[in-house]
Length: 328
Image (cartoon, rainbow, N blue to C red; front, side):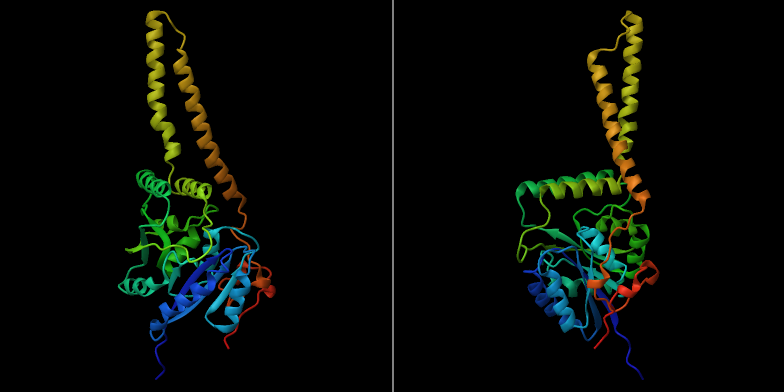
């Protein structure tokens, strides 16, 4: 009788200028999954997100040496979250693991994640603790999670990172519901299903510098809030009704005292309110407009990509330019 087919697990690793980290990451990853190879098959999909160093060259060398390694190369730097989405659309595994090459999220946790997934959870996600970062950044992160938890329209998971195992049906929900403004962790939380948190200690980058500076982290936080909440728009109601009542009260008092002019402080308050509402409406309208343009969330450079197969051929009009990697 033929042997039972092993479950396939997809590992997704977005890369942007990580040439010094890739060899170390691969070594640690291989050591982590080696004890599991009698029970699972693996595929590793690197996404080259517009790297300008030797990252793509190193990945291609690994593709030539190792059948499980594949490469999706984007035409430019689209960002971490679109890069993950590109790989999700080509993941063949019954479970998908998202991991970064910098090893801040240690590959050694993968066996524990898989063991938890085998218990029946659709999502097993890491909760980072003791992050090695400046105090101000740490406090800002905690404040962001606190605010997001309070104002989110749907489920929000504090301190959840992208380091996670998700099932293929969670992947399908993320792909189906993804907007132009992609935040993978929010999409994972929005998907629902059964999930389990695995706390772990975040580590220092094994090399190089973080790609998120302070401004980048602020933009990511704002994007997460705008994606997961309509609270800024609802603020127009929460603040507008009391302000309207205050205006009526002042006008009634003015009519009684025969002083019908609004005081300067109330005029200033009204103007500030209108400016605030205008800003919020403009930001949300801009997002609706960009979504309506329906531009690609990422563009794949098929001439430099190496995939075993293409999961959705109708998505790619220039299919003949896409090299298919065959098993040796």
